[in-house]
Image: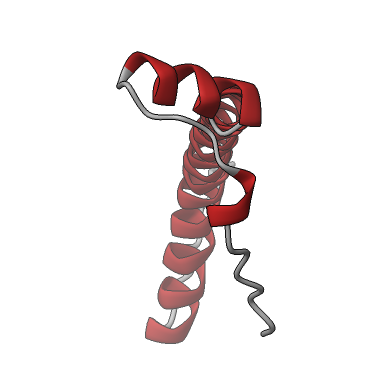
Length: 99
């Protein structure tokens, strides 16, 4: 007895569905890996920026302290004396800035 295999022809629609399924099975893992890699890079960049911001904040605080030291009355009087000027309280006028 011979067994005959019957060839079943697939319609164009079935071929399209199978091709689409195979395409999705190949593309889905690739796109997941790509998106996770992109997310990891973005997170790395964010952390790098946070560190740079912290360094800049510390620099700004240090500069603000230096400004406060240089703007102190004793420092101003010291520089004035070095320049040959004298401190006369009667000649000082204060300006008030009302925003």
